[in-house]
Image 1 (cartoon, rainbow, N blue to C red):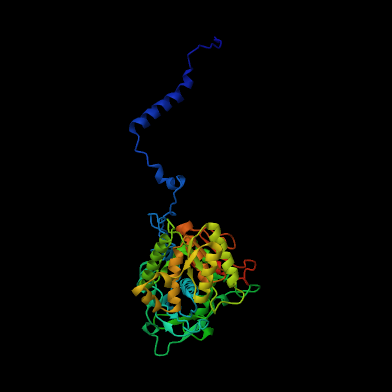
Image 2: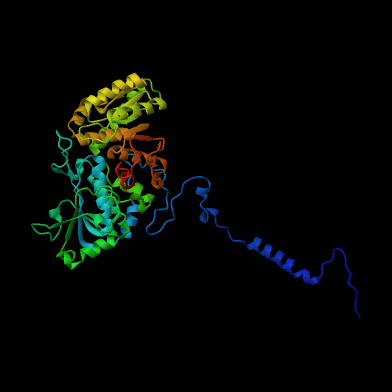
Length: 461
């Protein structure tokens, strides 16, 4: 007998009760015996969500767990963050017996340090297991354009212990030698081979001053050349070392951001100024702040000026008048009442100081004006380029910096100061613009090569 369909309010057919009943039992079970839930911090970058920066994930070749974003890499005494160097070293293809000699440098601090670092970076890519601690070519004291006089020790400008510690700790695959004669099995008359890295790649169509567009392939090509019997040289080994020195002029070859911002922004700190320079620079900066305050500047703000008009300045660089007009315009717009000037031309410094009073009501002093007694005597005992390092530290601590393009000193200053904007992960400086609010460089930004804009892509900050 067929029973007709009936609808009974509040009654659910049995076949529909099974699923909800199982769900209820499962929920009760989970609630009763639930395990502690892992923190969301383990899975989500909570710091990034909240607006704080965080380091990339840890890996054998990556950064440590702790954040290093609170390190001001723009300071002249900033600590060296070593894991980016360690990562590059762990990725290298090492060649026993290959030794790099990075001493074919010349000029001021901008040129010398960048030559050394570019040479070392090529050495890492080549797989050099030996490095002679670089020496520094001294400038002629009476003829500033004469860059090729005697070689002086690394400590002439830099902290040698700091340099050695950076490599010993983060790149132990490399042996550091104080002198060429310290290299084992080198013999009485070591054969030093001279190379130009750009030649290890086809540069057809490239401007002569353009960066090396083949750095990714340099290591393999160089090692093939190194092992090629046609060179007439033995394959490098501990018993048959091969010594490599660059031809002069390898300065801006390496596009620094090819290695990522972590390496680009930390590698510069392997070259820290020596203790004497650090002390005098810090003292001059302290005295400059005191001078500003004594002249009515409550917050001790001061403008940093690099006036590049010395006898070795090139003819196409901005003239004294061009620099002065641009600098004083910036001073007026930003309301500076005092300034620190760095220049090797005392007469032009006096001229600028007079123009600053007349046009901007701004008082201008130099390191010789603010240091005194034993500090001044010590300053005057230094060479022209060493005194420039004291200037560098004071300008680095200024509230705003004005310089000239294409002075490597000014470019280095602007890039070093730019590290304040992002620390280890600072993005490249926007060249030819008003900058980052920390620096302004007057110059011609129309032609990449003829205007030397390539320096910004090959300068280690």
